[in-house]
Image: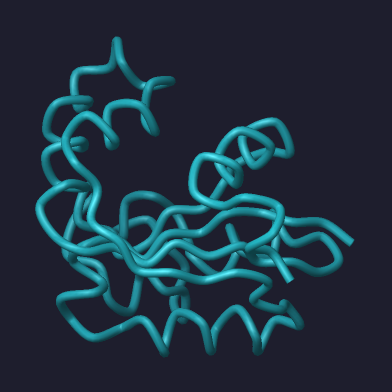
Length: 137
C-alpha cells in the first residue's frame, strides 16, 4: 500500500473538475484517504514548492497556486505514485497522452489542473505539509 499527494489546482477547482479528477483515480483502483479544500497564501505556496525555488517559473507557479482554492488529497493504493502520475499525464498538456487529466482538461503547462507527488520522498514531504496523521483514514 502506497500513499501519495495530489492537488486539484485553482484552475481545476474553477472548472469544477474535482469530481472528475477523483473519479479518474478511483477508476485506476486508488482510494482517497484524506481530502480537503483550502486556499494557500503566497508564503504557503512558496513553502510547498520550495524545491523549485531556483527555477524561473517559481514566482508564477506560487502566484497561481495562491490565487484561488485548491483541493488536496491523500491517494492510496498499490503503486499509487505511478498510477496518479499516469492518470495526470505529462506536465505539458500538449505532451500528455490522450485520455489523461491534463490532455483532457488543461490549458497550458502551468495551468495543468493537477499536481501529484513524483516520488516516495516527495510524498513523504508533501502529505504532512497538508495533513496530520489523524486526518488520514
